[in-house]
Length: 83
Image 1: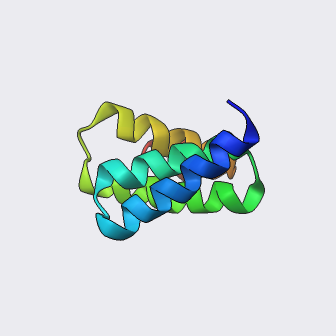
Image 2: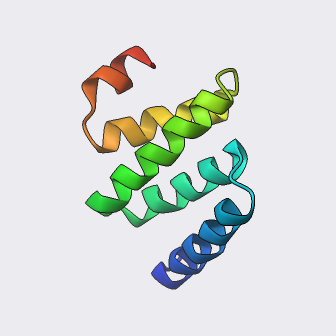
Image 3: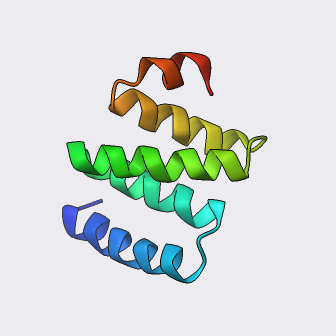
């Protein structure tokens, strides 16, 4: 995936979250931010993934994305406890 692909995905996923701010769209946008690997994007990824995990606490893929996002911002409390 090229950086243009990631930026295009971020643009489309931002629109999806704007239109339908459900856990699945938030989780997908979080993943796109994590692929960019930029520090401010990591925080936005973490915030989106946190909300998605709150909405879907039993969804394994959502929780994995949330934990990965927590790890990228070095949030030991979240990444070590899972909550």
